[in-house]
Image (cartoon, rainbow, N blue to C red; front, side, top):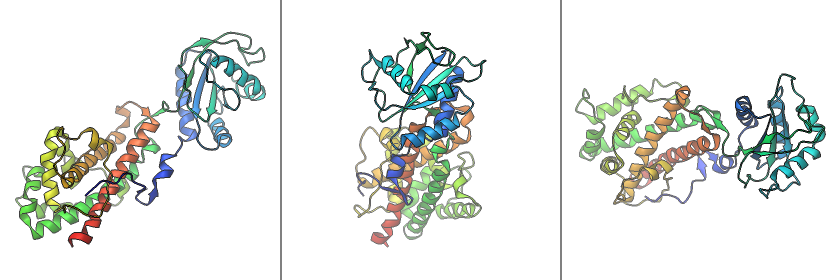
Length: 361
């Protein structure tokens, strides 16, 4: 069982769409408003890389910033490639867009904070330090003055709570539910044919109060799944432990990386993984970061460990998003990338397990 070099499909969705997905104008506008409210500067600059149609993005972003003294400008001719001339380029951009600046930066007389958003094709490859800049005489409210300005690149810094739409929590829940269903089917089939093969894994996830029979536990989990009306809201509970993924999550939480090899070995055996099969799967980044210090001795064990860690991390992210008010905000690109990687891991594992039936019957 060898991992693919890359995954191109997640639950029927082209990964390229996700990979090129831009932070929505509404989300960027919210980040700008937060920064503007916390700023002590009279004028702030915010840089943002747009990979798609900049004029359309600028129009939508400006709409979401309505009521705030913020103007959205597109960087076209000013190079912004010399640290000693970056604010000179900034003034040139203002001069080129005098009409827009006068329209959107007049603002309320009580407002002493203004911002210019610069939409570019690239990230700002310069140190972001505060420097004084002489503004044109026509500049609204503070024209002719020399305020200190910093241009902050928000491309990788626009933050959001963990329950942001870009986290795709509903999709994570759905994929987790679907993977659990395939795991249950596989484990039940092996347990019915070769009970001894599942004994070690049952010892790993079994709790005090459980009966002696693994297949009875699996039957109970299956019955509980019938009560799930909306898989996109599926959120297992470690404390209740009524689902298979909750048992796996709890086990991974309490196990150091080097201990995962033992659990992975027992799961690989319980799933009756073949030595080789024409399948592919995605090794999630969390499985790489939390891999045992000694590499798994087999592809089957590596696949099983990937399932364990990916399920645990997915459950943790779903739960953290449900309690987002208790955690800090994080950059949207980071949240989106982690979610996408977990979705790849879940969907890839599910496809590989389904494909095994073609080889093992």
